[in-house]
Amino acid sequence: MGGDEFLIVASRVNEQQMHQICGDIVKTVDQTMSDSGYPVSLSIGMATYSDTARSVSEILHEVDLEMYRHKTEGKKPQ
Image (cartoon, rainbow, N blue to C red; front, side, top):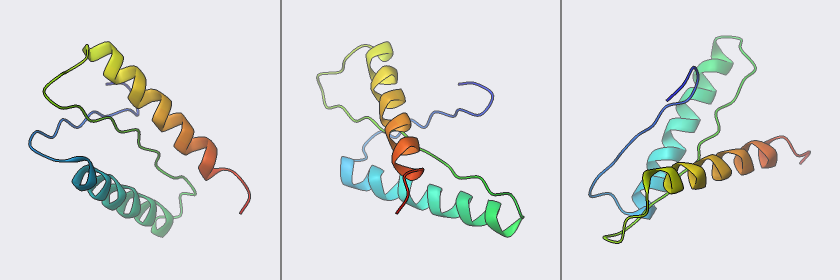
């Protein structure tokens, strides 16, 4: 999509499976970056839809909001 933004379209994957896929991607990238000495993390936004698809721009907007929510939550002190 852009310099550091990527889009994955997964057909025939339900929401639970997509959460697992996204979680696996985040763990792998975060660990690889940490092992390489780069203190960065990955944030993923996800949207699913059924047969009643919305417009592409609506779906991408939902994904952007979700990604920024994850970024904000990830930076909160534990």
